[in-house]
Length: 47
Length: 164
Image (cartoon, rainbow over all chains, first blue to last red; front, side, top):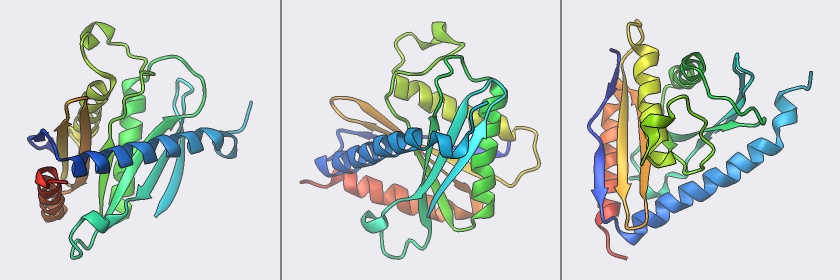
């Protein structure tokens, strides 16, 4: 196998700072997904 | 870096794959590598499960991007949308959508490169257990960028232990 899945880094009871960071990533991802859905017709033409 | 790649599966799923650089201000200034987010979104309304062929194709697109861009580490945040259509419902009892995506993401990369002659890659899963929910993140890079993974891991660990 040429892809190595390492042992997970598990963080219990993270600081508020880390949670804010991850929730920021999550929010950005939601916005990007919405943007992608709105751009569907630029990349795929109807049959 | 902002790149959008289209992919249409044999089942008819229309995917847009967005690759976007992360603001690196939380990382040490000497982290001389781009940290690039991977976002996969189905942009049509096809309600059938993905095949293994499709999952392999998606992982191949992501790894090709990694191969074509030398100084990057990819990250994927497993989201909690409930719109997963799976062939394996019995196995999903008690499994949250983000946990399921976490398992699928690891499997995608393991399967795609088994028995291939590709360069070595690393998949580093991260689990962040808050009181409300569990966040799953994957860091993917080439073996020779392992030191950057260590640096990112160290930054996240420091951040996890910081008081407000």
